[in-house]
Image (tube, rainbow, N blue to C red; front, side, top):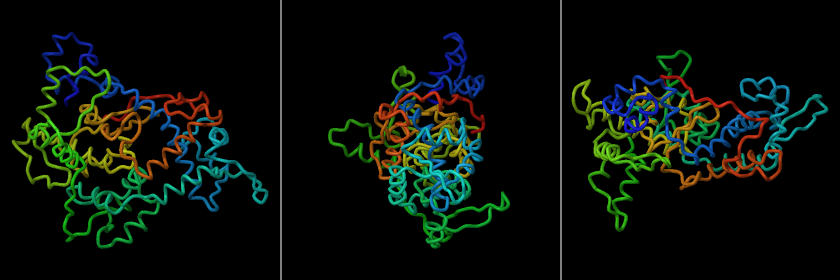
Length: 406
């Protein structure tokens, strides 16, 4: 809840005196979710990046359909029937022709219909991404270990397999081939669905969270002036440009950094608790544990970013009792929330510098090259820079609203 005191005056349009008298928790309840999102501090670098990504997501959806089609050729009528679901606003033919360096159209005399295929450059990138899959076993094991039950719905993992860098056949190539690590069982809460879980009896691996690695590097850095007490439970912060950091706000951040909490791989009852059910201290520790889980989850993703709605499907499985989206807004020094492309996307701020990953991986590099092809579009090389404003034919209506229970 660190950022709310900075946002509330603008959101509530109250006088400075009134705002100062309102406790942050009580005042937050008087704002709508949309108002809280709209009042966040904008980071132009992430917003420019998302200008391209909102088109890339549609391109990737069509690309996946082509890769799953026999002969890597998708009948244009079939794509046209799926256009509304894929939000191809001006139809499939127009969409395909808009990205000539990604897709190509061919007429098939035998079936008397047009076929959509990948352009050579896009096909090469797709091959590079599939061959550069990271250590999926480790990622899945870490993901399951963050759940108190050591299990997660398989359908939820299917929704974010690309974000996690899993192969498209991960159920066979990863889960089925590692029966001593993973198992599938029926989900008692939802008929005809499955839970993926770590095999019972296997000792939990001693995973080290990404934030712990950062803390160790900071402490061992030559000439470091870092406060050991603050680093023990602290997170790296980097605030949006132009965000006013008052003396009071800085003091609250420092106090929050010192607060103990239960790590993402620790048992919930293994420490960091405190107080009764309604104690303020317990709520703050719960919030910090939720930040730790979200931080570790984003660290596991290939691009250190994910759509908030997808992560919200795991909220209860991770034992998070807070609103996920508000958690990101409350900690703008750790996360950045973008609303581009009619979706809420969260970034791990520390992983980026000037719109690029600081520590890239082969899958990220392949997707970055695909993004460059998307941005070139059909106007020539003049559009091949990140941050290009969308061309009129693919312009999307922006929306900052989302369900309040995310």
